[in-house]
Length: 576
Image (cartoon, rainbow, N blue to C red; front, top):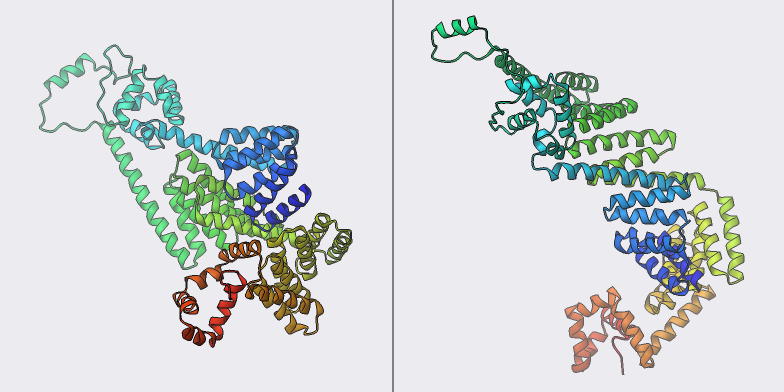
């Protein structure tokens, strides 16, 4: 019985019905509480619904029951990752790799967890220190160079090393606060005047000679002090840098205009010129990568994206910009995958982009790449001959009443040839025997979808609906089948059974238990709910109870009577 429940769970999981999968795996666990695979499967189902707390609980139980099973650690890592417990996720994946060093899902999971942990640590470091922005990017060095005092410090290796340490982690500032040079630099970066202690060893301008002091004293005063040549030099450099940035932006705009006109070579020239003028804006790289992508130069596109990511991290650029570069790289890899048949690099790149910034477009591209990979695998796996062999094996097990085994073979047959309605029809029969009615109904409907003329599909669907006590719907299905084969005895028998149940309800011959069960089921049917919520039908029901003449008029309306019949069949209305 546990195996049957597990088979139902696996089938529901495969069809994407994770709630039903959880229910079936829970039933199996109740029957076999020491089976680690059941907890693992239920953990995966919870994770698919993003219920990572329950997924973590089941993953821990899996590892507890089977500590030497690598998949348990994969489930554990995935749950921790979903809860943003990145260090725990890294630990779980690492333990799994100790057991199975070549396990690719564990390797991939570990890489994702490490990337997410690094990104979280970087964000935490920047947000933890209120002065972190003062030390970010090349602006710090520009400010220190522009100040006459701190410019001299930049010739001192120990000072440069301290500033680099602070830039990597602003919290390191606490380690160097006793150094007056750091305090002076801190003041410059915050635009606060700090006076250095008199006994400090800060390098000043060389002391003037006595003759120089004398000449300075004899000099006539001027109304405005002349700027020091050094300060003017810095100002000129700043002005030149600003001008270069302005020119770079103009080149970028020209590149954008050329790109829109599909003048790709011209666009490349403009973006390249922009990079020469200003290498601190990675949008020039990502834009040029977009042009290479349009031109089909995927290798060049990927190179520019890699440069953008590397430079972006150096400059501590916005995460969205880094994510954009990774997404563009992933797009190029997808284009290349259509020739190489390897979508894994693209999928990995999109996943990295999402750890930087969860962009809906990136997520869509990831889903498309994963679907393309799945379709390719399905295409490579396609083999009608093996599909027929698996279906025959399933038939043998079905005859032996070994329904879970039969489901396994029919499923393999479907994987080998997903366009054969017979495998779906046979698996629907198995699910019906196992009591997995929703799964059986899906297979029967898929069977009809693939071949609307396949009569067996209608008998399967009608049987499932009958067992689900949807007698009206089952009757409809059987009648649809009879349009294709009017003399089909199985369909005729099905109609007879449905009519018997419908008439039984119409006569009010249902037992209290049957009536209660049918009413509960009917109230969950959206069609029944719509009928009961219809103001016109509510008035019709009142007339049937209180106004015989109006009721006679209603009885002449086929649409009204059809709805009344549905309410009778559902046990909601009883005719006496």
